[in-house]
Structures are given as C-alpha cells and as structure tokens.
Length: 104
Image 1 (spheres, rainbow, N blue to C red):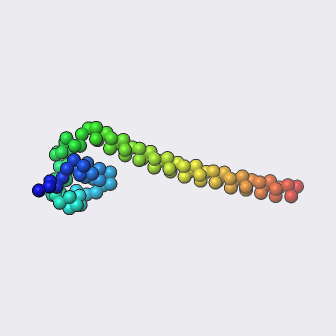
Image 2 (cartoon, rainbow, N blue to C red; image 1 turned 90 degrees about the horizontal axis):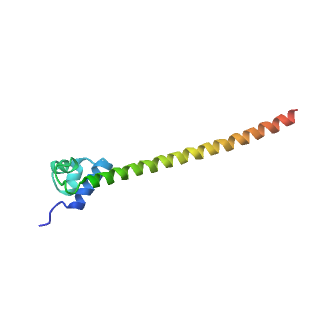
Image 3 (cartoon, rainbow, N blue to C red; image 1 turned 180 degrees about the vertical axis):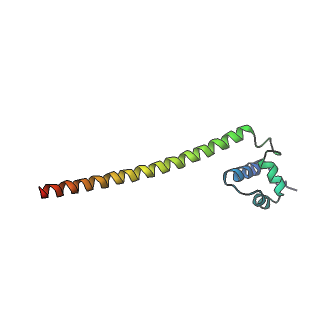
C-alpha cells in the first residue's frame, strides 16, 4: 500500500497553507488525511525533517521576492501615470502659451 504523504507532498501542503492560505480541512480532503495531520505539518509538529530551517528560509525568501516584484510592478505603474501626467501637463502649458501669445 502506498503512503498518503511523502516529502514532496508535505512541502506542497506547507507552501499552499502558508503562501496561498489554503485551509487545513481543504488540504486534508485533497490528500485523504485528517485535518489534524495537516495541522501538525503546517505547525512543524510532524515531518520536521522535511520542513527544515533551510526550507523555511527559502520559502521566506521566495515570498519576499514575490512581494518585491509586486511592489516593482506597482512602482512602474505609478511611474507610467506620472509620465503621462507630465506629458499632459506639457501639452496644457503649450496650449496656454499659444493662447497667451494670441491675446497679446
């Protein structure tokens, strides 16, 4: 009989619970184990040899990089908006100068 969990599945459970906020009961149903078994995995009560400090550091680094990438994308969007606003401001200034020349 094949075991229900293995190292790769345990890592996947931990990541999905912590990164994607998948609830224990849903993970338990997907892996045909109890919610208590999932709870013990995500709280490092069992499978400690899989969820090592190195694994946790790598997971934390991956989340940090993802947040940085999201922040960079938001900053790029803001920069594009500012650029568009500056362009529009320049167009408006040119129109005002032309109108002032016509009136003087």
